[in-house]
Length: 116
Image 1 (spheres, rainbow, N blue to C red):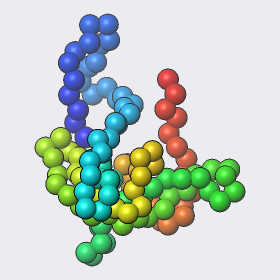
Image 2: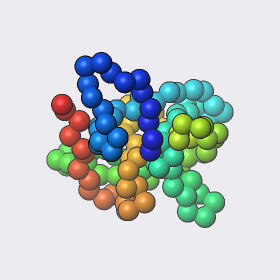
Image 3: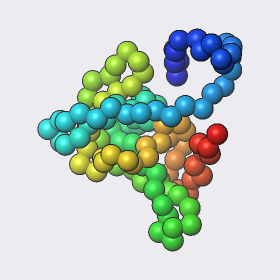
């Protein structure tokens, strides 16, 4: 993914540097309820079926696991995001955006530390 931003006066960003970002998703209404723009890397397909992985707590609550949910694909945008909607998508859910093609149903995962 390529991102652009204005150069900050008090921070030096150089080419090739790695950063951690938090993506704020825009929601809109569609015929299927809420729709969201997510990084295109979150969207997977199997035959005619499109899906994303959601990350939630394990049944025992001592970790996290992924769950596959079907989505309807909307319009891709020039910024690398794509519109998705689905009956099981809600505000506040965690959608897997990296390594999604490597996951299996109910697989345990570890969240990246987002604290700075």
